[in-house]
Length: 240
Image (cartoon, rainbow, N blue to C red; front, side, top):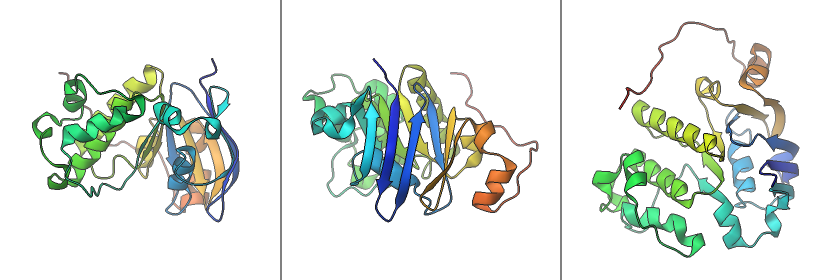
């Protein structure tokens, strides 16, 4: 089975110009670009949340041809919006991650623990912080066990420790077979990814390894900034 995610001639009217890409399997993939470059639009189109022309291909199948519940088993979406309209508890939100499978989760504890949510499991999501809501949505995506994960700016509301924990968990998921697409503003984080996709004004500028894409020439062209290598503060999680 070809577990590679591809897009072919993907286009969203007035927002994303036609592009074709192959996303490396078992990888962490950074989607980067200035504000308005099309990062969220690309992820939303792949996730089926926006109408588009072209194809999104997974395991050799066009995702548009797959029934919606089967599609939800294959792909999980986490958006930057954390406003909940109803006071579901944290654990109730996580259980929604198995809705497409028609089954419940017998043991939520590993997901709650990994996202540092154990003490919040019975709290309404309307009463927790923005960062805690973001971790709840990420945990729900993990509960789906979908092999394609599309996360739109998942680190924006998180403190540094939780950012590191999310990135470590994402790496473990990729090593276990998932393809994880993450839109980012922090190019230092993108430098740690397996593949980087660079967008600008709805156009695909480059795709490849961080060394191939995050070059001084491209960063100046797209972001209007100069870049150079320098010593920097390196943070990591302590051993457990």
